[in-house]
Length: 104
Image 1: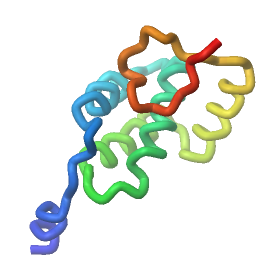
Image 2 (image 1 turned 90 degrees about the vertical axis):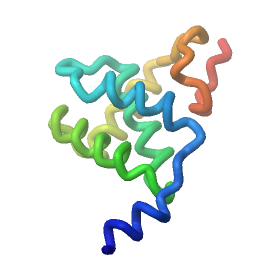
Image 3 (image 1 turned 30 degrees about the vertical axis):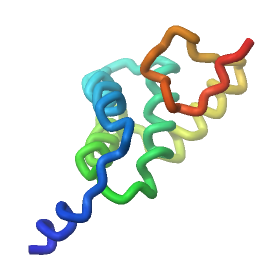
């Protein structure tokens, strides 16, 4: 009954389809690249306080376990990535709505 109630209150994020595609690509990455770490960190930030999206939140946890990294380790790693002048490509359509500054 509790599970049913939580499912009835679940909201779907406007970027669900795009984000689910990213999650699905990350979940099998054995050797994640910088962009993969950045994507996972931003998706964690997007969904942490979002009411609903339990499937995406569960997949995020699975990815962290698969990559053998904690959220704190991920954030530390992405901070280093950004500090090395990392900038995602302007042509990367998966970053829509990410808040990334892609200007030169």
